[in-house]
Image (cartoon, rainbow, N blue to C red):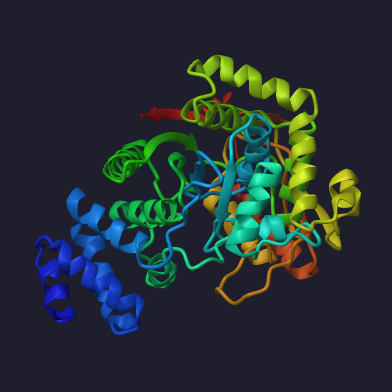
Length: 433
Ligand code: URA
């Protein structure tokens, strides 16, 4: 087989065979196909697409490019994954909740890349928290406390690791066959039996409109069926950032507050919807509305918060930070963004907010960059809110005065304030089963 022929075939809009896809994934992972050859093929896929059969073959080849976890000793595992966004701290809140309700949680999360944040970085914002543990300790933790959240450190779907970085470097991320194979290969390799996917949609997501989000959802559900993993997709709004905080320490603080009952409305709606479906897939109740009530109760009675403390302690984290959020390091400069007129917030572009946060140091511009945990953005006003002249719209948390001043100016420009009452966008856009 020859990679040049495979590239030419896709370039000329032909369908690749299972053997050709397997050959590409195997040889690229082994380093026998160069990055520039792989980039040419990825670009051809991006432009000419893939059939569902090709996408499924790509997913399975990537899933089996490294280890595939056997979690049968742990029990039935329901996994959750988001297609990415800004201010997305859902895993930190949701997974302790469902763990407290008896769902086995064994979840791996990635670092932030591009303008989107990553749960691994947020976990590492908690001093001492170990995200890089071996498979045996991972399984033991789940058996002991019912939950373990770690980074993608095991040799799972290494083909995706290489391809994801390559796609990011050639601007070929936002593509349905490539996203669905990336996500589903990791989920299959991670050993989950059932999968709930948060498919984000809007300016801060890879899928910019509902039609694309539906197509991505249907593709992933199809792959799930073929791989014998029941999959549910919840399409959620990512047209503005989720919740109040963007940035690592800030988002952990927001998650702790949420688990203590002080939860932002949009975050709550996403947590309830995803959680209700996780409980359903785990056989803990078919009635979605009843499941939501159970989740609300577990937050209210403090048990979800206790489970989070237990998780952090078990992973080596310093729980005194969880018990007293004032211990988290604060940025040197906390600067308000002030409204210059009265009206209603009509728009707050999530992708642009994400870029401001990355430039402050909350994310990485290059893979090897270090992040600053204390910086970020605190949003006091969101779409639909009314505002009066002189009121604070948001705070910029910066460690560098110049970067902070620039961020204040940029965020000010992003807030679109109109005289007409602006409608809030629904948080849950569609559920696809
Ligand atoms: N999340 C992933 O894991 N992969 C993608 O391609 C996009 C979002």
